[in-house]
Image (tube, rainbow, N blue to C red):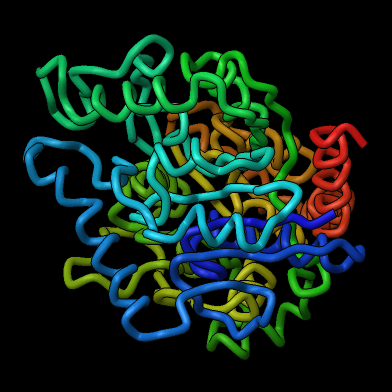
Length: 416
């Protein structure tokens, strides 16, 4: 069996990382697997990407042009929106030349593949969801808008009152192109699977849940003192970890809930023994008003630095308002660090309440405060949380286990 994965890039970004790990997991169990991407960062020979400078420039140009329609919506609330009207000029031809048994798509927007090109792939398709965009009019996350269940129009996220706006155009193109497409959908979480099942576009498709995988030989508990020394973090403090891409500015990541929770929990009198560690953001010119010291780690561009961060922390906070899965939460568990999160999106699949962490009532900073206190206040409980976190990751997210789940699905799709 020959499987081809397609993703905008190979190892940068959440969806790309997930595609890369599934690809590597399949190779580790002896399956033929390749990854076709628009932007290639690694040197792996089995990853197919632009080889010449001109091809790289074309990819960057498509990425730029793909986002230009958003300029017509100055009142929009989001920048993460996928029109999918452009595609790699040889997208379908390259797939035909590789001649895989199955094409497993991941994130294919940013000018990599158009809606119509997906229809033209003459192979069984498995689409691994990493956002809601495949079954919406283009938004990555719906922010409580349910128009994707019937027909996207007058998109509130675009700030639009026009029935025939960009979301309606994208939705209508998908409805026409994908009506009879041979497609199986994989969701990394139960929540995203339920959203897909309730959508107009995917309601008749087979939808299954397989979590994103991890290399648990890399994401593993490291000696805490070693990790803190490597990152120049204090060894004698409790460390609370928070982070994501653009962690301080993206409201979906929930820093606005974490800030008041920490300020209530750590007043001026008891703030000396605890510090906050933030990755995914540099120290801002206007610092948030916090009672505890903040350590800014900036953007961590390799998995080894991430592993050090998780291992150095006593608890990871994921106060997101929506998450397709919750990659940082699963990575934290793999490093033996418990997670406090809101009970929303894909996070309840990862965090077992009072077993591997704490699930707080959305979206109350008081509940988040209680969860942080609960995770840190008892040393014996904390040891059990760390042990159970690692066990959960080994049991559910190891890349070889996830790859075998995909292999079973591929065989089912091919009738083998």
